[in-house]
Image 1: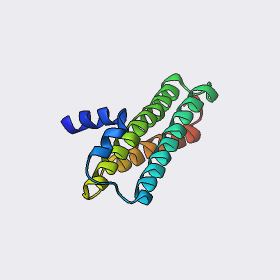
Image 2 (image 1 turned 90 degrees about the horizontal axis):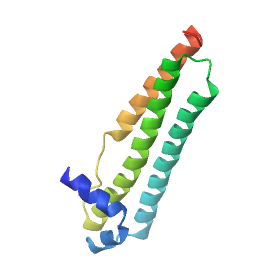
Image 3 (image 1 turned 60 degrees about the horizontal axis):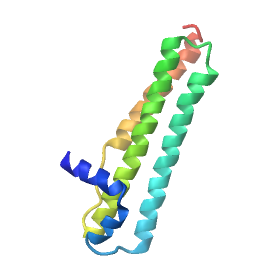
Image 4 (image 1 turned 180 degrees about the vertical axis):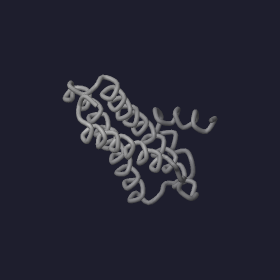
Length: 130
């Protein structure tokens, strides 16, 4: 938990990362940044999907609509926070010459998206008024 708090501080002070270790090959830093941006695109897609479910499916039962929308919105928020945290952790590991950090987050996100997708399949099969 203390490491997470330290990383949150580094989100807003990326220049401090430069003081840690030595500068890695710029290609690795750029790849890390591209990965960060891919996670942000994923977060934006999840957030957009949450708003789409809420706004464009008004005939869907309220509980289903709100539940699916909130699941997608929450996944988007978590994904965006994970993106910046993972970027900091990877950048620090590269500068220190350590192994890159591993995470269970991709598996968890995949499960959340799969559950939402299965719920949407159920909604389509049963009908809007379910």
